[in-house]
Image (cartoon, rainbow, N blue to C red; front, top):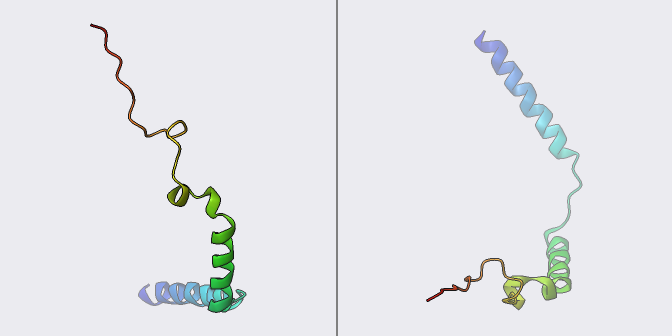
Length: 68
């Protein structure tokens, strides 16, 4: 019983390796260039870089209204 589960496990490993071997690879320098280009193109929409206006910020502190 132990041998058959080991064979099944090894078949899964081999299947995963075949799947990974068939993937298209991209050079790191090319991927970095694409990532840099994407970041520069979308920088104006990034709230971490541009900030969030207080009118559209859902996490702003709510004003407290009190009646005396």
